[in-house]
Length: 581
Image (cartoon, rainbow, N blue to C red):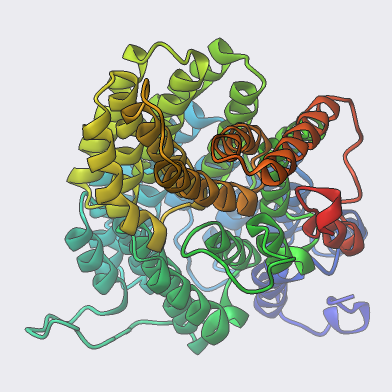
């Protein structure tokens, strides 16, 4: 063990305290190497020998916390502070500030187990005691914890100021990076990002990096890595997918060894999802499914949370509703308040569930869930998620009834306003393409065509391919409506058919079976109009094949071997039609 029996007797109490404290500090790095159940006998052995050493009780607290045993963790925590206060009064160790950190750690425990009300009360008490003690470092940590509970941006700004006073570089960076992610606009986001890596004011546009008060080179590298990943998020928000990808790759390649597993997993998932956006893929025509390429990007991670989300979304698109329902139950089972980015993960899972409900035709349940999530995102100031949910709500309203559109007007107008205020160009273009569908429903065909032609270049360059496909489908139906009631010329039919074919190519790349079935129907009709019966029969055959797959998709199925890379590889190679393999 790390605490050898043959040497403990020769150490002073201070040396024993320092040795066990070192183990506490390294415990996070050892979590993947040793399980809490395996560490427990070692901890108990130390307690039997060194019960009066406070750090031994703190080690027990950390181990119980890792096991998820709340009451055992709290009991060990109380014992730690009791022995720490006794040792301080006896001058056994170097004098340490103990009292006002007790309620702070207690608040952190309550928050980790989801008791937000108790956490907020304990945090406010910690702030009060720390302010009376004149400890800016403790105040900064308490404000950081209070922000996690309340989501109040003003508290986070106070935290950044206090952290600077206390020379807490990691907390300075963390607070400013969080401010960058929750900024009202891109200029505020970039300003906060710069403050994460420099304290010195400069008149230059690109201020030089200056990181003082770091405890180790590793800490500086971790801060730079986190800064790169947050920079990628800002680029994504304003619609520069290429820069988002580039900065994410820089963060992983240059600083990957210093980032946490959760940060690296999130970054890799973001890289994978870049395949769902951007220009049309023309190479490797037999292997061009976007979800398959994304899955290949994360296949080495195995059954990670993000991989399961990706497989679920793909299953919904393919109409594999039976598999998707099993996956969504699996994803809900993996949610717990102590996981990294719990709130974001919970919103993502519930959004996927809403998508599944909407596709299955359970519109009322889907709308209710989406509206709940929109309100939650507003409270948490998660603007990207809020914009995406408003778009999903609009699409759900439109798909629920092909003749009704009034219920979709309010959410899409709200989304357009939000994305315009936040300079979210790609999401604004996406919302505009959905607004064009409302004009189509209102028989404003010329307006719909003008809107789609205006935003298509932006969508094709950086937008999600599903919305590009949907825009082409709407555009083709607009062209068809303009010539409704007239005998279509061969030239006109071919022009409209070309637009339907473009829509089909994009829907094939994301394997949306429901939309592909509609596209094949229109293609068959247009081929029939120009008397190309061979192509008509091919389109009709594809329509029938997709219909059979959708009929089978509702059948119950098992979860699948998500831990098996071979199984994930098999999933990544799925095609729309069996004869395309």
